[in-house]
Image 1 (cartoon, one colour):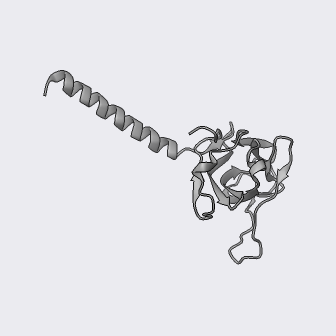
Image 2 (cartoon, one colour):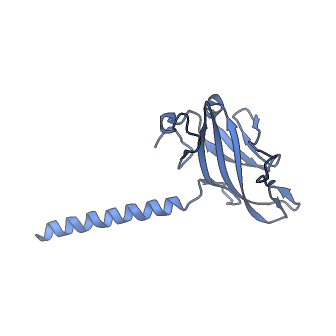
Length: 167
């Protein structure tokens, strides 16, 4: 094998390795977090529920206040562009239901949240608010719904960043 060909193959191999390492690093990053780092969306999946959708969020937050607070409504809420709030999708009558964690001052915790959204609501820009802070969950516009199976409730789709209209 000639020297230029070996150099070219070495560079291609190094570039491929760098791309794989970058993907691994990206997968370990939060979906999105605020500037102070005290509030972040760790994971997000969208699940089709027949004609509607269930937005599942894994959230981590540190209580910045001097008083205890709950990592759930009304302190933690999903907001639309005009400030409307979306209720949690909770099945409180099931034995597996767990209420949102209560955070002491300065304490950090994680919780899972689910929101049931119509197709119209899914097209809105959505923010998650915790106390006075906000995070962008998704920009306005519908995601590529063809990537979500029509009637299969168990399949979920992950979006790597708030712009759901691009890959």
